[in-house]
Image 1: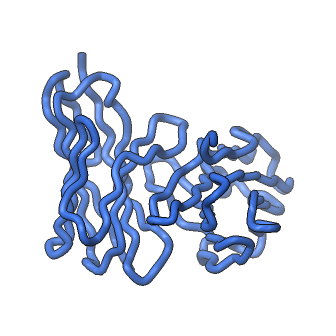
Image 2: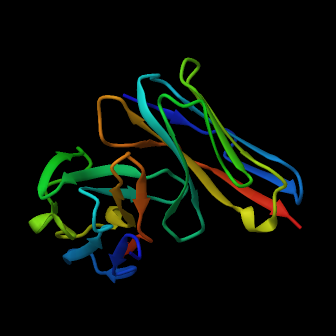
Length: 112
Length: 112
C-alpha cells in the first residue's frame, strides 16, 4: 500500500523567501504525482502534474521535481508572497491503479 | 466549462437522517472520484467510476453509503442514517485523459 508523507506539517516564512516543500512515497512504481493547493474550507486546486517519465515540471514561480528511485518529490515556490499561504498536498497515483494516495499536507504561512 | 461543481456546499443534519450530495464533473472526463477529508488530514479515497460503472469502493464505505453515476454524467453520494463520525468534507474529482485530477469545492457535512 502506497504511503505518502509530507514533512514538515507546517512552516512559516517571511515574504520573499523561497519555499521548499517535501513529499516522500514508499512505492516507486508510480504513474504520476500531482501537487495541489488547498485554502481553508475549500476544495483542492491542481498546481502541477508530473508524469512518471518526467523529472520536473514548471509553472510560473512553481517548480516540482520527481525522483522515483528515492521516492521523493519537491515543490519549490520562488519569491513567496502572502497569497501563497495555504496547505499544499501531494498525491501519488500508482502505476497499477487509478486512485490517488494523499499526504496530509504542509500548511504554509507567508508573513508580510 | 466551469470545472467540477458540487452541491450543496454545506449540509447540517441530525444524526439518523439521510443526506445526498451531487457532483457534476468536467463534461469530457470519463473517470469520477469521491474522497472524504477530515480536519488536518489528506483526502481519503471512497469510490470511483469509469463512465457509469462503479469500479472500486473503499472499505471506508460502509453499507450506509451508496454512490451512483447514471448515464455516466453527474454522480450522487448518499449517506443513510448519518452518524457523527460522518462529519467531514466530501470531495468529488474528475480525471483528464492524462490522469490529472480536478476537484470541486467540496460538500461539508456536519452531523449533530
